Length: 149
Image (tube, rainbow, N blue to C red):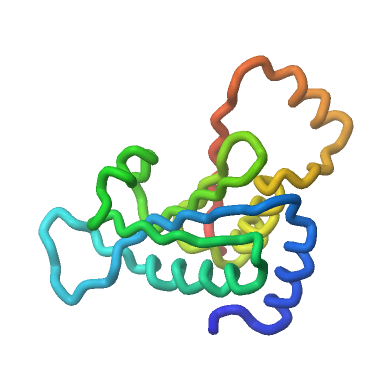
């Protein structure tokens, strides 16, 4: 078990705010004892899968599907997946949220919050932020980079 009981309780409470179902697709590569030329091993894929499976147990509105990029390379290519592990969250809200790498530490909290947002739950924004966002006239691609400390 990766999550402490206190974390499990906090996620359950946070997921009470899910407005609708959220699906998490994990793009992953299984561990292999063989070294395959041209194939980069994924050191955190199994841990990412296990973590998301634990989260899935905490709410019937959060489901996880794992896509093996070696078994279904077309699905990964069509989704634009170029790094592993990758997690894509989808729900009633427009757009999608993608996480690259193992979402541990502060990134785990961001994953749980993002799941709430994509569920269609109302966002709480400052008036200034809401005003600036309402001025956007076309889709925006946002990338946020974090570095473990």
